[in-house]
Image (cartoon, rainbow, N blue to C red; front, side, top):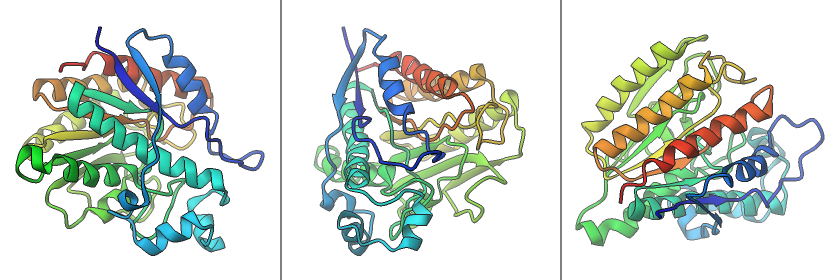
Length: 304
C-alpha cells in the first residue's frame, strides 16, 4: 500500500503571550487528526540549512534571525517575539516543504502539516512568516532536479490562502522559471499587494460557485506555463467561519477547491507538494477539519 508522507513541526512550539491570535495549537491537533488515515506516514521535519534559506533571503536577514539581532520593529512586523524556538520552527517548516517537494517528486504527492509562510520577503519577515518556505523549496528543487532533467525545472506556486502571497511574488518577480499564482481577498491583508505572475482578487463575501469558477480559469492559465512541479498553499482561511478571511466559502466549497487542484495535477501528471498555510477559525476544530480534509483528498493523488 502506498502511503503519503506528511512532515510535521508541531513539537516546536513558540512561547507566545496569552491571548496571541496565532493558532499555535492547530498544528498538534492536525497531526492527531490525520493519524486516523492508514495511508499516512508521519515524519519529523528536517531543518532547512542556512545555505538553502539564503537562496531566497538576504544573508544579513538570515543572520539576524538566527542570532536574535532583529529590531523591535522587525519583530512587530513578523508578529512573534524572538525566541530560539521561533528560529528552529521556521527553519524546520521550510525544511518540511523542501522534504514534501522531494517526496512528491517520487510519489506524486506529499505535504507539510504547517508552512505556507508566503508573507516573508527576501529581507524581512511579515504576517507570522519568518522564512518563505515555498520560495526556498522552489529554488532548492531547481538545484536538485537540474541534472536529472537536463534543464531548469519549471515550478508553479498555487497560493489559495485568503491573503495574497506578497512575499513570494516579490522574491520571485524576476524569475521566469517559477510561476506565482495567488487567489485572495482583494481588500484583505496585505494592504499593499505585489504583482504575482497571476493574481485573482476576490470581493468580500465571495461564495463557492464564483470562487471555484475563478479557480478553474486560474489553473487553465497556470497550465500554459507547463510546470514540472506544483507547490500548493491550501489555506483554510477562505472559510466563512474564519476570523481573518472575509470570504464566504463553505467546507464543501473548500473540499471542492482542493479536489479541483488535485484532479488538475493528476490529469497533467504533476507532482504536488502541499503546505497548509493560514486558518484562523472562530472554532479551531473547524480549521483542523478543513486541513484534515485536504490531506484526505491528497491521499487520492498518490499516482506514482
